[in-house]
Length: 152
Image: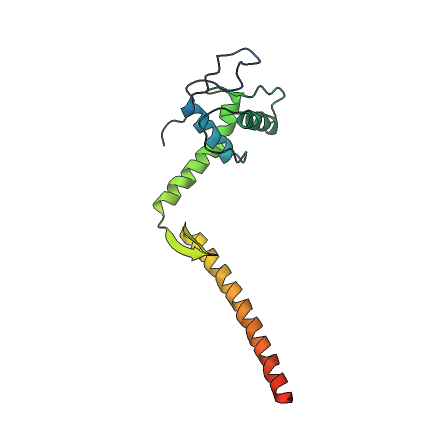
């Protein structure tokens, strides 16, 4: 797995506390959005520009991680970056594993989707359950109609 690193601080500019100048390069902003999403913060979209929503998300994550002072800035190798990294790496490993698995194409609820074997099995079982309940309902209704017809 390639090294994951920011080239410069990302976040609220100008910086409220001491530290390196905030650069907010497109590459770093995109990486930060992905890292926050992997940590359950979002949805944040795919923009490579810093915006108020991303600054709020950084601040929210810092509070969630238990930081007493939040500065809405992520420094390369800093506390916020180190707190974001483990789940992001786990998400990357899961994505890599998913890329190696064969994908199945199926139509479900009018949409064509690609899914792995486990997801395919789950959707298939759900579809069968829906069909079984409808068939059961139709058979029951048919019996009622037959009984009513015999009475007449």
